[in-house]
Structures are given as C-alpha cells and as structure tokens.
Length: 383
Figure 1 (cartoon, one colour):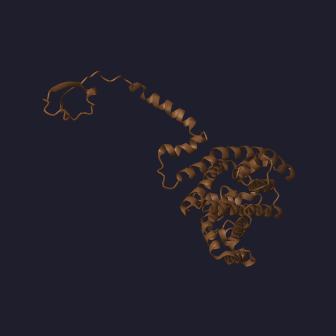
Figure 2: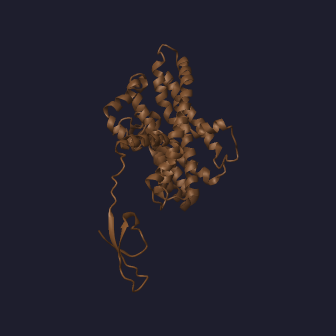
Figure 3: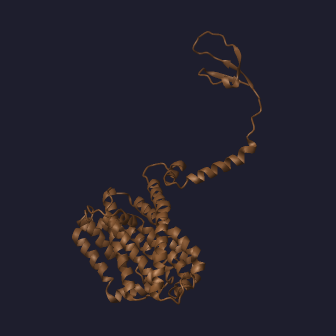
C-alpha cells in the first residue's frame, strides 16, 4: 500500500523500451535512433534509482554495511541466474548475429576474466583497454547492473555531502558530473573506459538528479494509481531487463536471414515478448523475492542467525518444501535397515541414599532400577 506506483510503472515502461530496442537490433536495424532510445531508457533507470535509494537512506537509516549487503542481495541473485542462462545458451547463439562477433571473440579469448568480473559485479569498472568489451560480455544488458552497484556504493557518501553542504554541495557535484559530457572528455571515457557508459562518472549526473528529486519532491507521483497490470510489469521489470536478451538471442537462430528486417522484428517480438514475460514472473517469484527476503533476514542487526531461521525466508516462498519432502524420504530409506530394537538389558544399580532432611536416620542400602535413579534426593551411586 505504501509503494509508489508511478515508479513501478515507469520502470516497467523503460524495461520494455530496452526489449524493443534489442528486438530491432537483432532484426538488423542499427541506426542512431535505437542507440539513443536505449541510452535514454537507462538514464531513466538511473534517475529512478537515485530517487528510490535516497528514500531508503532517509527513511531506514541503516548502517553502511547493512545497506550495501541488502542492495547486493537485491541485484545479485537474478543477475547471476540470468548470467548462467546466457552461458548455457551461448554455444547455440555464438556466431548467429554478425553484430555480436567482436564481443564473442573477446569472450572466447578472455573467458575466465570476463566471468570473474561479472560474478563480482565490477565488470563496469574494468577499462576497455584492460579487458575488451568487459561491460557487454555474455549478458549485454548487464552492464547497467554494475553501474547500479557502483551508485549504491557511493550513495550514502553523496547524501551526507548534500546534507552537509546543501545547495552549494549539489552545484559542485552537478558541475563536476556535467564536465564528463564535454566532447573531449566523453570521447576519452567512451574509448578508454566504457563505451556504453558503465563507469560511474559517465552517468552520475542522472543519479544526482534522482536524489534531488526526492529531496525536493518526496511525494512525486505517489497519489496516482494505475491499472494493476502496469504495476505488475513494473514489479518484474528488473527480471525483464535481464532475461530478455538470452531469450531473444535463442529465438533469433530460427528466424531466416532472407526475411526483411521488419518481418524479423515482428516475429522476434511476437514470440519473445510472451516468453520474456513468463520468465520475468518466474524469476521474480522464485529468485528476486527469496533473495530480497534472505538479504533482509541475514542483515538483521544484533541477531543470532541460526540454520533454521535462515531457511525461513526461503520456505515462505515455497523453495524448500520439495527439498524437505525429498530429504525426509531419503533419510528414512537410509536408516530403515538399522531400525532394530535395542537389547533387553536391565542394569541394576546399588545406591546409597543419604536423607539429609531427617537427622539421625540410619543409612540403608537399597536396589533401584536404572530408570528410577532420577530423584531430588542427594544420592551417591556405586555400581
């Protein structure tokens, strides 16, 4: 009830813009319109992230390590699953799209370096001069995920700066960020560091705009309600953004090259959109939500995390129900041959009882069964 539906709907709209851009790209349209449309959509994502992250920092007031851990758990589970999907289908899709040959050549030559950079979410920080096309390897849309994580790392410091210096601090950051868009500096950053803009300074201005939007207009779009279908598309937008590329790349194999670009684009969207939507809901339900819940649970301050309690967030999403039934059946199967009754041995114990409650009473030895030895009296056993 407290979610800002305007933000959800905006994310869903932007994610499907990226899907359409990649559809027409794989179909053969390589004009500047597609490039600018995809770039502007990512800029919109960064602005929304600045708004949402500032809201989290202001309202929750979490320690830095907890904030970073929860943000990591928000990004990493779905990202690593989609990366695994892209690696699984890579033998089928390699060489099928002429525009991707250079990227695939870099993947083949520096496979493990690319994989390590992606697994740590730092592939946007690696300069192209060191690792060619590091930002686009395996899962091309994933370059913005590294950018997002970089923004999370500096967001608390930026908010402290704005709170400390106010409007002057904002102007200083805005001017320094705007300098990166000057043609000579932008050219150097694009060619030496990151062509798509996965390096933090290349997009920091848009994040700063989102932060100031929250600080100046916290209720932006909060009272507007939308059709729930659009809201649901926004909720699964992160999964949509990641999973659509391997789906479209696989479908592109079966589209004949002789068809016109328009027909190829129509077929790719008609077949890829339903599959992308289905996989987005599955990822959201079984990967994103459990990952968020697990991150929230494990980051509870001053709380002892036990094995059973760590399983609770996953059990709430139905992840462990099947495993519990299988493991229980397996355990019964392994122990059924050893479930024999114990030997009927009844050891007897001679015990001396000292009744300290009755002074002067003589000590008398008595025989008791072993199971009767538990008594509140002071006993001294002799076997």
